Image (cartoon, rainbow over all chains, first blue to last red):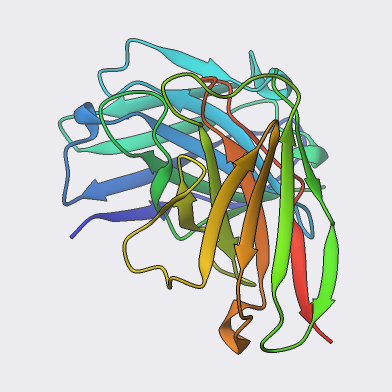
Length: 121
Length: 110
């Protein structure tokens, strides 16, 4: 059974940092593209970042470039999102998601449970 | 970046109604297939995949859900709305590695 279990959210002051984690089971991360998607309170879904399973390609939405870093640890079969220089507008529930298939264009067939990041003083 | 325009933003419907939601991409999202996916999200829960490649039903999704394309417009149809279908629906393009979602359509009880 494929599972994505997230951890690492919380309350942080503006300018602070958090590392979000997504532990995968039931499949090997290196074989899939993985993503982070966020949802601000009462808002829609926003794609944040993608990473190829082997870590060789990474992409970000413009609003987080230079502040967020997506990475994988294949030994632990885990996905991470390092978030730095956090702003109020980064407040959201963050989801990890798996793209089906070996390529970059598969739909998100499995999602983590979500973790809330609140940026406030 | 590819913009996805979804409409309507909300709708009210009754159990048994036929419901249609539309999504339009700002540029092509089709090559060997249509890279358009639909998700359902219920309050406090992660989104769930309903339809991928514009018209292929994800395993376990009821057959009252269907997807289609007409020109540059993609459509999600619920043929007979059931109580468990009241939720928010999002389209998403996966043609570009810079993925984008539509704004969402909230389906409410009339």
